[in-house]
Length: 78
Image 1: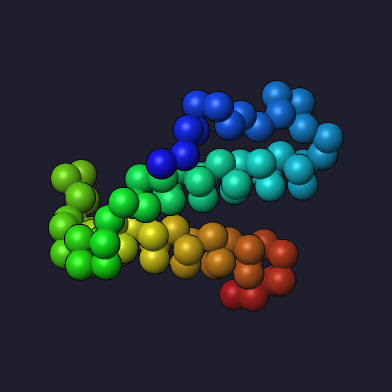
Image 2: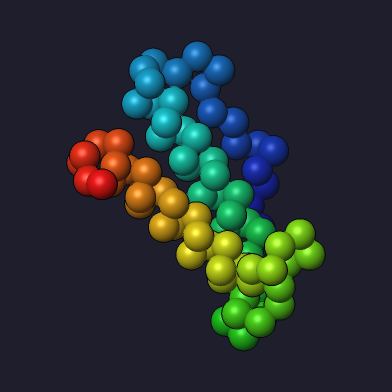
């Protein structure tokens, strides 16, 4: 498991782009750290306590949300 407390983005990033990159990197690492010890069966069948989604479902949701945001924001897709 990754030590997320040791990873900190810059308090004053050079640009908005670098701030976005740092936040995405942190968010991705946090998601991976929470699920990296699960096997495929556990990721697909054990619902999380705060939602009806499985860990795999949460990862799929995060990926689709990130992809959709970039598609709409930068590529201008509806």
